[in-house]
View 1 (spheres, helix red, strand yellow):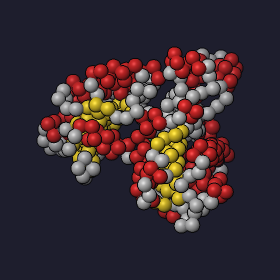
View 2 (tube, helix red, strand yellow):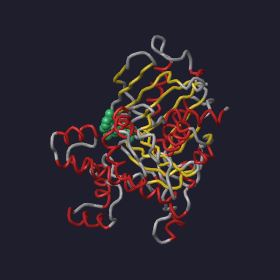
View 3 (tube, rainbow, N blue to C red):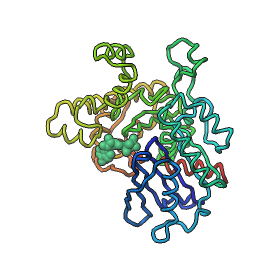
View 4 (spheres, rainbow, N blue to C red):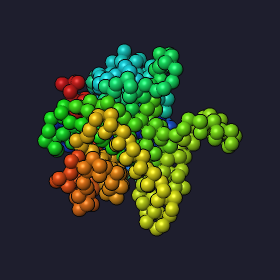
Length: 397
Ligand code: ADP
């Protein structure tokens, strides 16, 4: 089967066409600046990337350009659109309505729309992408894969905030968690790599990219995760503050004469390692600056690692133990120094990092702990597109 995986944001759209039998990418790329001017990147497997400036005033036009590129006579990956058997869509927020992936019928889309309030930046864009695909490929089954679904197994003690209960009843204010597709994919892969049944293991996954979160997977189920109602809670991220004392919001609003929306913008877009370091939201820039002696960059990296370590400690308590700790996403897969800093907090758990293994692990599945470490530690590349492809196949077959 050929599955088109779509991750649609407000002004960009990433896509991959995957052969689900061989689990190989046939073509991939992205549309950027949708509604502004428009740039299409397209890459057929084995060929160079093509980047073209192409007007895409709407998402529908962007998807049309992707489909045209896929069937292009010279560089297309398929001969006709009939070779696309299903489309898998990433959907950010499924609220309490979706505990697993689902076929996107009109009824289901209405329910997804009801979750818009919970993710006003993401869900409406996801829906626009779904509807545009439905119009352009009316007979192709579409599946929604939710970032929140994997975490629907969290117990109430983990997902409830210490707020008046009526806010949960009236507005469904609770912790949902995100990156679920990645945490599920990586934790399953950890069990396979370790050679133990998934349902028997206590695994902590650290997804450390631009957005970052930690997840406790107990016997195959997410029992806690660091993001909350929105992806702002938890770790210090590229530009997001993560956990802060909520009183800071009013304090900044008064001192800086900012509206609530403006303070939220600071917390989402101007904080995190970017705000702390005053260098960049990109870890590679920060690591370079720190090596050159930039003290704020050093602080941002150390504070980031410290926060991750605190969450690992908390989740070890939540599960009453841990068998494996895995690192994934851009920084987690690639950076030995930050992984080492985080793991240095767990000597008391019997964690022993093998420095040579850790140094070598970059972008490939690797054990980074020593053979006699009590907790096995790994770097495991995530692959959210492949996970979405698998979920889609499972539902349409
Ligand atoms: P997202 O998908 O959330 O944009 P990624 O998983 O691509 O994020 O991770 C992006 C982050 O990972 C950036 O901060 C980037 O600097 C960092 N990163 C990527 N590759 C490396 C590397 N080789 N060494 C250190 N950090 C890296």
